[in-house]
Amino acid sequence: LCAFQTLGKTWPNNTQTQERFQLDLCCLMCERLKLSTWRVQVGVLQSMKAYFQGLLLLEKEKDNQNFTALSLILTETCSALTHPLENKGYSSVRTEALSVVELLVKRTGESGQWECVSGKSREQLQRSLSTLQTDSRPDLRDKAQELRRNIQSQP
View (cartoon, rainbow, N blue to C red):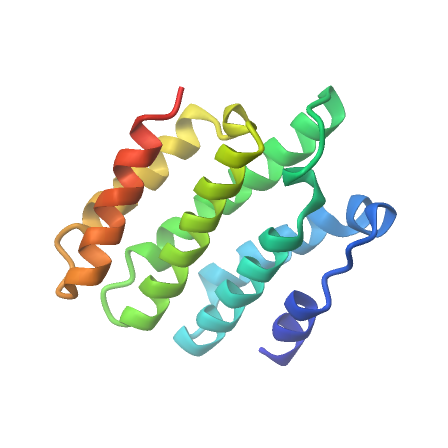
């Protein structure tokens, strides 16, 4: 847990370092989301949010190499987020997962890189968000509905 929190907080703003480690770190976080206790999941999701806040690929000009790298990262992430989004036992896990999805939707939209999110990834997110629309917490239901509509409206 501490390792993920540290990695998330210290994710460098250096292009060369990010290019070297961005996919490896993403895959590691995604793997841990599926295999961990709820506390570790919350920590990983918080780290994931910090990672995506500082991910330079979401600020760069579009080119083939960046498109491929970002597409791989988003495919891996969207697949991994389905588990915490559909976690019926812990609202804290669902809340953090929604926060990551919200950030991804916002940053890909702002940078004009929504096409890096594959059709399959969009479907996975929409399916998981639709399960949240029956959540016992109204704030999570509303946020899930808003994000689902936002994803559906993307070209």
